[in-house]
Image (cartoon, rainbow, N blue to C red; front, side, top):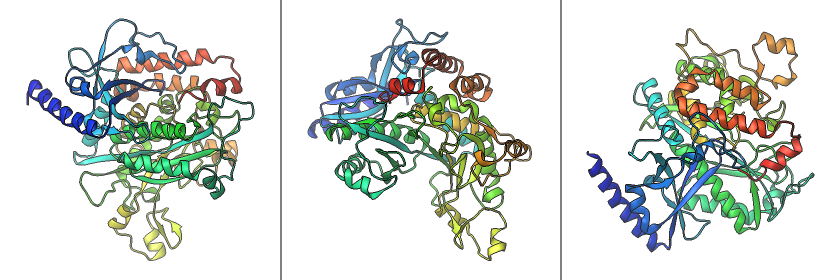
Length: 491
C-alpha cells in the first residue's frame, strides 16, 4: 500500500470516527504523549479537525523531550529547543470518549518529523521496536503481555502539602472501612474505566492512609502503556468530580510509604488459548529455560533500568528496605520484598509450586494447561509512576532478551525472606546487592548500559541523561520534605 493510499484510508476512518463522536456529544479529542520526566502532555483538537490531525498531524515543539519535573528545560546534545517542529498523529485504534470528562475523547499520539518519519525520541515508537525485537527472540509467534499497577493517594480538593498530610480516607490499611468512606468515588472510578473499554480486575485500599490501587487486565506492551496513561487520567478526572485531589507521587510523606507502579510481565504465544511460556516446571521454581533467561536479563539490568523506572529524585524516598518496594536486586517466589517477584499463580496441596520436582514430591500431575491457567508472571516491584510507561516497558523487554544462552546465565538462588533481615555477609555470599539508593547512581548505571543505549538510540539515551541530571541538580541539597512538596502534584 502506498503512503497516499494509506493516508486516505486513515482519513476515511477518522471521518467515520469523528461522525460517531459528534453523535455522542464529543467536541474535542485530547492527543497525549508522555515526556522523559513521566508527565503526560497534551494537545487538543476539535472533532472536526480529527481527519486533518491523522493525515497531516498537529504541530508540536520538540522541546518537550527536554522538559523536567517542574517544566524546566534541560540542555543536551539532542534535547529539543525552540527550533524545529514535530507532528502529532493520534492512534485511532485507541481513541475513546472519556467517561469522566463529558464532551472529550482521548487518543495516544505518535510523533513524527515533518517528512513523516518517526521521531527518534518518540517513546511509543521505541516500545514498538522492542515488541518486534522480542517477537524475534521468542521465535516469531511469541509475545509478551504486560500490566502496570496504579497506586494513588487522595486529598481534599484544593489541599496543599502539609508537614503532616491529611488524606481524605482515614480507614485501616486494606480495610473495608476505607471503602465505605469513599464507596461512591471508587465505584465511579471502576465504572468510568469500564465504560472506556478497560477490564478492571480489582480495586482496593492500599497500606498508607488515603491510598488505593487499581489493576486492569494485561495487554500487549504498547496497549498496557497506553492503558496506564488512560487509567491515571481517568482516576484524576473522577477525583475532580468528587472534589478530591489525586497524587501518584512515589513519596507523599518523608520516610513513609509512597505510591508504586509495579509492572507484571508474562510470555506466551500469539492467539494461543494456552498462554504461558514463562513456566513449564522444568527450571528453578518451575520456570522454563526461556523464562529463566528472560528473568535473568531483567535482574541483571535493574540498576540501570531504575533510571527509567524510578526516574525522579522522589523515587528514592520510596525505594527503601522493608517497605515492599523491592529495594534489593534479587528474585523470589511470591516474595514482595524482592525487586523481581515470581508470581506462580498456582498452588498444589495448599502450597506454591517452588521446585521442578514438586510433582514427585506431592504425587500431583501438573499439566501444561494448568500452568497456563495459573497466569504466571514476573512482577517488578522497584518502579513507580513517575516513569514514562513506554520507556519503562521498552527497557524491560530489551533487558529480558539480553541474557545469553541459559547455560551461560542462570538465575542466582531465589530469596525467600526479606533481604534486609539477612546479615551483610550472607547477602554478599548470595550475591544480593542493594539497588541504587540515589538517582545519581541509577543514572551512572544507565549511562554505562549498552543494552539500553541500543534499545533507546543515541539521541533518546542522551536526552534522558540530560533530563535526569537536571533534576538531580535542581534538588541538590533539598530535604526530603522539600522534595515531597515539589513533586506531590506533578504526576
